[in-house]
Image (cartoon, rainbow, N blue to C red; front, side, top):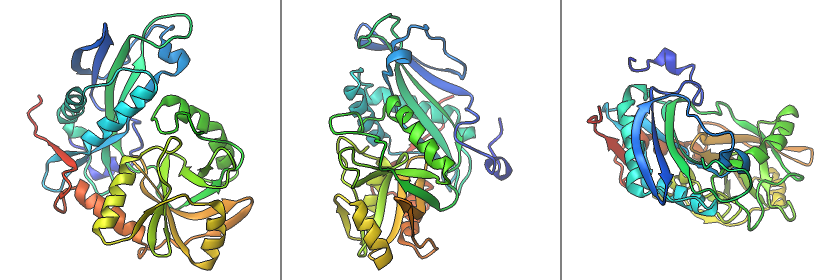
Amino acid sequence: MPRLEADAVASLKLINVPSDHMFIAEYSHGEWRKARIQAYRPVPFSPLALGLHYAQIVFEGMKAYHMQDGRVGVFRTPRHQERFTISLERMLMPPVPAELFAEAIHTLVDVDRQWVPPGPDASYYIRPFVIATEERMGLKAADEFSFMVVGGPFKPVYTRPLRVKVEREFTRAAPGGTGYAKCAGNYAAAMYPTKLAQDAGFDQVIWTDAKQHDHVEESGTMNLMFFIDGALVTPPTGDTILKGVTRESVIQIARDLGYDVIERPISVEELTEGIPSGRVTEAFGVGTAASVAPIATISVDGTDYQLRVDDDCRMFALKNRLNDIRFGRVEDVHGWMTIVDGTAR
């Protein structure tokens, strides 16, 4: 197909239209085998595949970008592979070697590079995942798996400042659980409370700690960040908060720009007192799908707290620098972009 033009990009949504190819490899007898790129198509599984019943499924979310000089670059492949490995270990699944992971990602993007849309806001979303495929009746950790990578053109999921609700009843993750792993069950469990919030007029929820519900953790599928007393403040990652690659990148960019960065717990009370007093000046979510998503309203126990969202907000300076790196408009001093060279044909 021809390269996507601006009018086609305008209608893009997350993976509504997959690109032409996919990667697949199979694991059995202790090793990954039969790695190949093939035409995108449904993949048959046994109805008794263990992943379908017991949620032994782990995935990642990544992006490739059509850079301003015409090259295509993938953002932070090694860091995504490291997080993938952590998630797989938690779900008792075999690691995907770094070399195989990188080859799968970069070859697929290279083969389907015509699907990588031009900027400024569009990209190519990449979804690597592993699913337990062993056919068995009854609960056990699987011994057979498939590693697949699919992708497609993408635009950010949030196009306007968000209205979010602090969640005081439902819990995303608890200490000792799987909150730090990017596994399928975490997302399924979040759907019901998110739907309730959306039915009440909110875009997303802010998840709080499982014990007291008095400290904020994440927002929807994003890490949370605030500007408080002039510093960039974000909750520390741990076993209940996913260690976001975009989060790490934004923290590094903030330091590059000379902002103070503080990783510490943030209480709901600090927000309800700090927003009206002017101590808390900005709130936003960061993630692969969201990039940098401004938050305009935080609702706590029925009271709405309004935050300023305008072009002078520092969150947009962070977003712009992040995109400048991704699209090759500034020097990639941290070595985050891997250029695919066009030789995979």
